[in-house]
Amino acid sequence: MNRLLSLSLSAGLALALSACRDSGGSGGGVSNQDMSHANNPGDMASKPGDDLLMVGDEDMAGPAQTTTLHDINVGNVGNKSPVTVSGLVVTGVATNAGHSKSGKKYCHYVAFVQDPNGMAPSGMKLYASGNPCTPLDGGSCHCPYPPMSNTPLDAIATLGDVFTVSGTVSLYAPTTDAGLAPQTHELDVTKGTLTMTGSGGTVTPYVPGTASDFAVNGSGYQNYESMLVTIQGPAAAGAHDNYGGFDFAGAHFSGSDYDFIWGMKGAFPAANMTLKSITGVADADYGGGIAPRTKADFAM
Image (cartoon, rainbow, N blue to C red; front, side):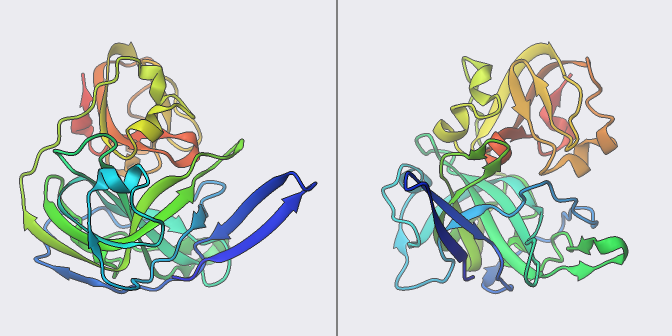
């Protein structure tokens, strides 16, 4: 996928990168797919700024090097590098992540995996670009949910499945209300391959000593990037924001990834509901939010 990249200088003092996922198309390959679990189909309501600011290119150029998620996350593997990483456990199934705001409006899809034995940070967001969305009445645009995305991520359908993933390292800076967050990492698998090598894998969530590390713009989203995290209570859940997010015990929880599974259209968790703990994936988008995957992630 080609990145449209523009470069501008502000008063000769600041350098800003602006790019969007504006080209795409499905590709790549999948082996040993397990399609038994599917997300509910539907439309993805995009947040403001859903086009992430990108630095990278998903084209697989040259031989892939075998590496670890930790080495990618700490910068030991260069941007745009083709890589293969084995033994990755699915911690977040593939889901619809909106679409480009301009051009052909290609659909975006993401999933999460983690190395259960890796040093922190040892999680990773997987990204794939699909076909252009289908225009609907009223100016909205529909992107099918996996396993109907026609991308390699259709295979990422069950928590605990184990994969070998080949893709391209891509750095991006998620948009926030304040501007740009620090660069984070993903593997672009649009033209990559996913090989299922097992099932029933487990990941022990990280339990922070200070839950506020996972508040909006907290350091936890860099230090434990895309890893499974448990925030312990007991504490009362805060009221939902416009995107299904809420606060709990000093941490922020995102409704943008999987709340169509557990959120009951904003009715769960109810404001002031007391919970023992909540588990989810530390997603750096929009300043950061822990993304619960199913209702089982909420201990009551």
